[in-house]
Structures are given as C-alpha cells and as structure tokens.
Image (cartoon, rainbow, N blue to C red; front, side, top):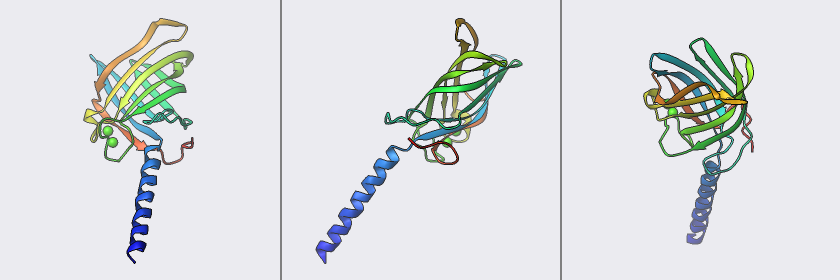
Length: 174
Ligand SMILES: [Ca+2]
Ligand SMILES: [Ca+2]
C-alpha cells in the first residue's frame, strides 16, 4: 500500500513538472491600445501582436499582427512584423501571462505609402493601464534621417495594454 502511494506521488510530481515545462514554453500575445502624449501632441495606437521570440528564447510563428498609430492627422499601418521579443520581469496580471514587455521591429505604411520602418516597445504593468507604457520610432527605410515619429517611452494617458498566453484564433503553433 505504501509503495503504491509513493508511486502515485512520484507520478503527480512528474506530471506537475511537465505542466511547468509546457507553461514555460507557452508563446504569448499582446492586445490593447491607448494614447500617449509628446508635449501637446496626442499619439493614439491600437494593436494585436504575437511574440515571435518568447521569454525563454523559443521562436514561434507570428499570428495575425496588427498595429495602427495615429498622430497629427498622420497614420502608420504595420504590414510586416519582423521581430517581436517578449520578456518577463514585471507582473502583468490580471490576467496571468508569461511576459509583460513586447519589443517589436517591422515595416509598414506611413500615410498609405510603404517603405517605412518601426521600432516599438509596449508594456503591460497591470490593471488598469495607468502604468502601461509605449515607445514608437518610425522612419523611412531608404532615408533613415526622415524620422516621421518619435515617442519616447511614456505611460499611457488613456487606454490599456494586455499581455496574454497565446490562446484564441491566432497562429500560436511553433
Ligand atoms: Ca494585464
Ligand atoms: Ca495593462
């Protein structure tokens, strides 16, 4: 009888360990939006983005990635996310998620014209979104001195950003 209980306990520990490993390799995604101000200029964004490189360095295929930014009558539309590095460090709960910071890099359209590049950082530092931050830098790929938007990392004035485990309709498979 004792031996039997010991065996069940060992199996339980192995199962928990396996679940832990699987969770550690869960890819993530981030959704949300809001506004940040640069002086008097309001910069508004909305997005759904999938990590291409997760906390543990595992790479995943990106799902449908969307990022729109509007400022002073201008707009940027992400066409291709080339990298999305997700890192842990701050608790983004609720909900429970495997990361809080999304560092992205990609190309898109500025006022309808392709050939622009963006580098950005979005964070989820809990709820409501008052501690969440955003940083954007957008420039012309062929002429990097043509920087069309630079927003230093700043807290959101309106909105909220949410880190999630990668569930739902996106392409979450490695
Ligand atoms: Ca959150
Ligand atoms: Ca948040």
